[in-house]
Image 1: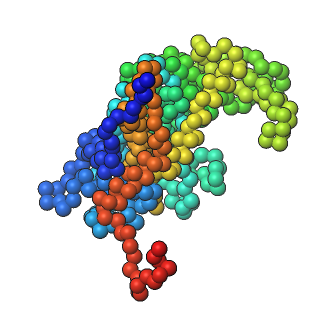
Image 2: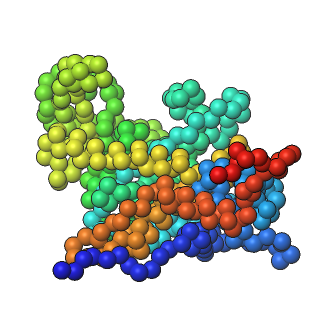
Length: 388
């Protein structure tokens, strides 16, 4: 009886670091002076190492013997990237090789990710302002578009947000990305920040199936969500632009569940979803399909595990750190499926390789390449307590 064997080859830590540095160098080339004593590979090696280590570029360089000065790296990060160009090439970078992983039909989600700003309240120009959350109303904010494939998240696009940006302007850009995908979009799942007349009009104009949790705007919908059982109703929102107004109509699926002591509450909880999809025929189906996007929370936990820290207000540098962090996740999933998984009849066998281990391998490779300090000066030799 034959047994399934894993491939004979191996991917070593230094090869993982090389893969990431090469990908960044290919997709985001840097123009350095001919007499520069630093290469783009040097910059990206430090950048990837700082993200994997969850530390700042300055801290990593200070503890390394084989890196340029931190000020040199930070100077190039601040001056060699233009915000608009970085967003364009970043999205190309993130989507590279994803066509090999996406099925013919894919579900996509869009979300707003807010990173709190706790600095001077009078120095928040260029930041994104929203309702109070975690003790502040100012945020470094990013919108992400990702494909959901078998409970895995592949980031397709990222966009930095600032005051003046609207949910509909972000959605319009993301729908343009979806229009260019080779895969067919089964449905678009959006968070409640996209619930407005402009976004709903855009979705209908692009003819995408969608599910969005509703916001209790107006007496009509408040009454509907305060009584009755699971049902489907027709609802509308009115939008205004340049003195012109229009009304968009859509079905709302109201799903009712008993709390039974959940969150220390009892009674009936009513959830409303603006939904228009051929595979959604009941309020329970609307809630079930939308719940599948909640995996984004675990993705954000992964995001926070591997991103360089910084105190800079420079939006381009911050966006670059976010892009590299998201790239780490995409590359891990790509390599896991294409190189580590074992081909077999039906689906591939995914061998155990958690994201934390992948990041640790990148970290160790960066430490080795950059000659990170492994010992500290001591004013006297270690005694017997340091030996075994």
